[in-house]
Length: 326
Image 1 (cartoon, rainbow, N blue to C red):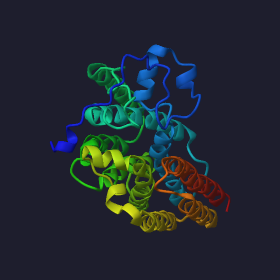
Image 2: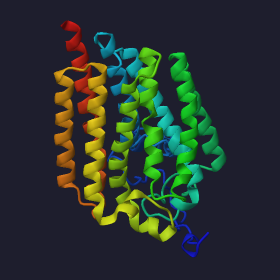
Image 3: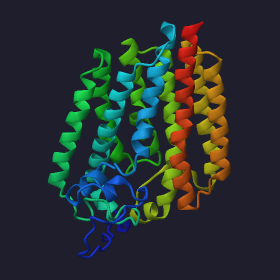
Image 4: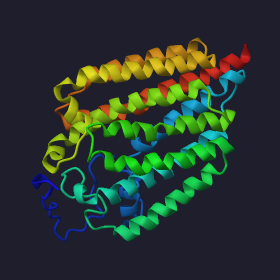
């Protein structure tokens, strides 16, 4: 390791951290107000008090489920599948975060924003985290087994990406690419859950999602750029620097084009294309409001991407239903 990496973890003293709000968490979340104190560290390990992560994991799958109805004539979206993907996204996002925190525990203790995470702060041991990780993974497996054979194999294959991602920040300035590969895999699983195959539209949603992830996670990474330089890890925020705004335009524009092409190939109607236009307007609002040197602005814009994705999702389900009436 380089000299920069030999920095001691931030001293937390002997304080009781069970009532301490972690950075990025929503104010007065149920994890911090209702959940038993003994369980709070595990909920924080899974990021339950930061739901934006599972939303961003879930939405590409929901979009794919809705769009996969269209080639068969459209209709109401399968609510059972939506619920299964919701449960799976929460569980597997929690499992991924737990694995990430196990791998990054030494780095996290050196960063102001992450020093209070359960493992570096000593609230959860590595062994306890591993047991918790296994439990969440079993929930994810139970959900996966309710899907088609193609979806099951795709779900198993995604584990390769989940394992690789936490290590990428050590080797490349583009770890967000690997996050995008993993986070948007749900689009492939979602399409296969409906059609039991992988049409070009499924791959286009996945590729569009990767560009979308490059956009929102580059914004997120700007919160940590000073600490990342100090401890020697890499990100697109550091790579792109002051040119980030121009790159974000490209990321969001590319994502929208690919999403729209996916809908066009699937046979989507005008309502879907209107939702893409509305999402484009939302992305313009994001870029106009963003200040990459203000962590609060970065967090606000990062979280706003839930609405960006939901605009496309709701446009897709309405379009699918309206097509079934014609």
